[in-house]
Length: 84
Image (cartoon, rainbow, N blue to C red; front, side, top):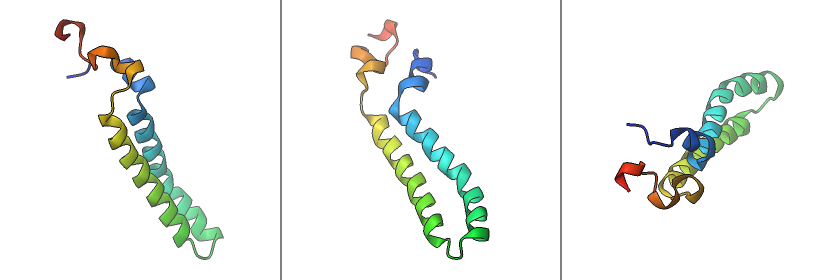
């Protein structure tokens, strides 16, 4: 079941923003590795940096998900008006 203010959550929640960044790094990682393999002799550091960045963004999104964000949740903590 979706929260009643799902559009606001998608636009403003830090957990969503961080997951989008993690997804971006996951999608770009193979492309950058192919480019780095052709131009850079030792691309292990690039692979490690991309994997680390995507993992850190995903971990930060998990942490951000459990914190209440007042500008989205307000005092009702994301509950619909009928459950307040």
